[in-house]
Length: 159
Image 1 (cartoon, rainbow, N blue to C red):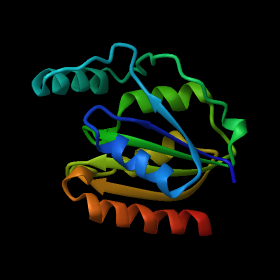
Image 2 (image 1 turned 60 degrees about the vertical axis):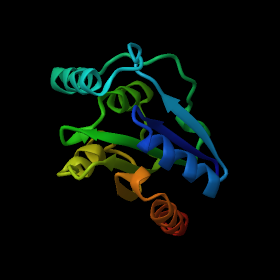
Image 3 (image 1 turned 120 degrees about the vertical axis):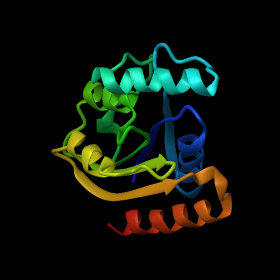
Image 4 (image 1 turned 30 degrees about the horizontal axis):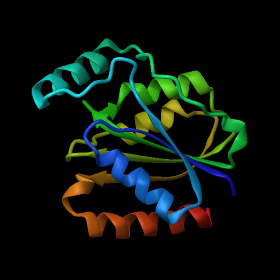
């Protein structure tokens, strides 16, 4: 099964989960970057993220290469910003028009997931959502996160 792991990360949590996934799977890794993404101190990062989230617009992305038809399984990861998947992930989904695919979703957050998986699923209507996972502060307990990822991938493979 040809698999892609697509993710957006600014603080390393989603990046950690995505990289662990490709350690468990034989998968292509595609990292998304916002066009205006640059290193920011935590307060500036927070306000940049709020601006993106509250604008309700899909921010432009830096160029990337992705053909959904080349994959049997697409795993998409997003940090949660204000209860929703980060806007650059929305841009990716809108640009690629993924439909009719087997998809697995993961989110990272610091305890504020609320209904974010429901919103994430809605962005991918028309696909088979094979599995979902949420990781609360995955970098705070690396070994536990690795174990959860391995267990989640067993579930995804059996679907």
